[in-house]
Image (cartoon, rainbow, N blue to C red; front, side):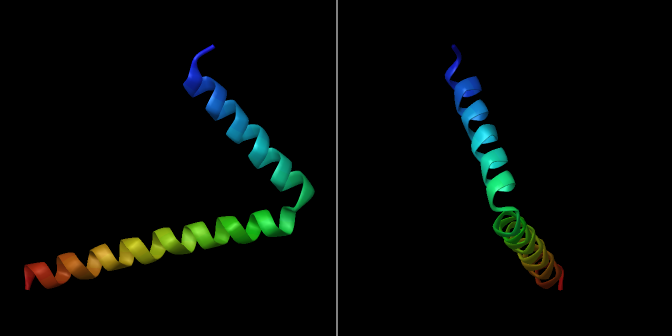
Length: 53
């Protein structure tokens, strides 16, 4: 079996387990992840703006 498929399958099963057993905590984790992505994009935007000036 391909190692990549095994790891992907294990992560998928783990994610489903967490979502089913602790949906509120899973939602908080996703919210934190999207907030981090948003903050990173904002920081990159500010950097490019200052670079152009």
